[in-house]
Length: 484
Image (cartoon, rainbow, N blue to C red; front, side, top):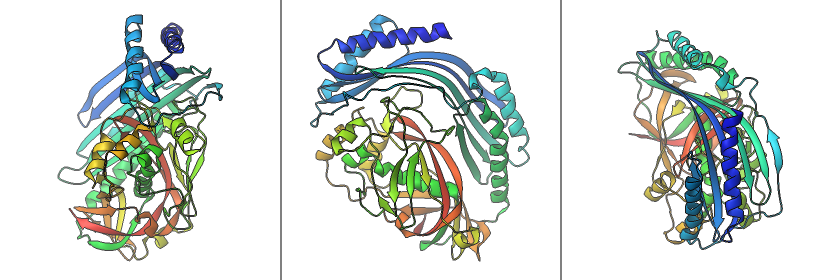
C-alpha cells in the first residue's frame, strides 16, 4: 500500500507546484487518495454483484478570477494532470462570477487523524462480508418475499494540502448498507445504516436486518385503514422526525440562502421555544470527518436555539462573505468525483420530556418513515438536483437572474410507513397519503420526545452525494395530510 500511496502524493505535489507557479491561481486545495473499496448487491436469490478493488486519484479545487472549479482524476500521468490543472483554472475564469470569493491566507493547519476504526474494513475479506450479509438475510427470510441489499465500504487514506501551506493526513473507514424488504403485493420497509467504525460495523448488521424484518411483519399484519385528510395531529417516530429535520437543514446552507431558496434568515423562528438543533461530529458516525474538504477542523455549531435560527452552515468563502467562522462544513462527496458542498454533518436535536403516550395523545396518524420528498417549486427542484459550480458565491449570480420564489421550502412527504392511531394505539396501516411540508411545519410542534434515535442517509446536492446523520427525538405536530 505504501507504493500505491506514493503515486497519488507525487501527483498532488506536482499539481501544487503547478498552481503555485500560476499567476492566474489565487489559491488551491489538492488532495491525494488511496482507497480500497467493496461493493456488494444481494437479493432473495443470493449474491447479484460483488466487487473489491483499489483506486488511487487526486482532486483539486482551484480559485481563479474569484471563482472555484473542482476536478478529480484517477489518471496520474503528467499529461493528464496538466490537462486537469488547465481545465480547473479555465473553469474558474469562465464562470465570470460577480462576487469574487475571499479565502484565508493566514490560517494553516498541520494535522494527522487516524479515524475511528479499531479494525480496518478492508482487512475483512469480501467473502466474509458476503457471508455476513447472507446470514443476516437468512435470519429474516421468513418475514419477506422480496429483498434488495446494497452494501459498500471504503478504506480511505487521504493527504491534502493547500497553496498557503496547510497539510492534513487522514484515514477513514466508511461502510454502509441499504436494506429493502417487502411482502409481495404488500408494504416495503427501507433502512439505511452507516458507520466510520471500520470492521465493527459488520457486527451491527444483524440488528439492522432484524429490526427491519420486525417492522415489515408489523406493517404486513396490519389491515389498511382510512387516513384522515386536512389539518390533523401527527406523531412522528425519531426516524420520521429526523427526515424532516434533515430536510429543513438544507435551508440553513449558506449557498441555498444566497440562491434565494431559503425561507429562513438568522433570527427567524424555526420551531417552538423548546427546539434546539446543533450540527456536530460524533465519533464513528456515518457522516463523521475530522477535517473537511477545505482542511478545516470539523467543530460543532448551534444552528437553532430556543426555536430561533442562530447561524447558517458555511464554507470558507461564504463565511468570509457573511463575517462568520467556518466550522468544517465543506463536505466531500462520496467517491470524490463531484465537488464538496456546504452541508450538515450530524444533526443533533435536543430531546424533550414527552413519553410515548404523550407523543401519541390526540394524534390521528403515526408516521415511522417518509419516502423522499417532492419539492413543489420547479426551479428549486431543478437547482437542487442539477449541476452547480464548485463556487458557493455563484449562487448569488443565479439569484440575481431569477424572480423571488414564493414556494421555496415547501414539499410533499409521502408516508411510506404509517399507522392510523386510535386512543394512542395502532389501528391499521395508512397508504396513499402525504404530509404537506412548509416553513411553518416545525413551528407547529406541540411535543418533543425524551427518546432519540439516529437516522443515516445520503443526500444528493447538485450531483454531489453527501453522507449525513441525524440524532432526533420523536415529535408531535399539527400538519396537513393530503390524499395522493
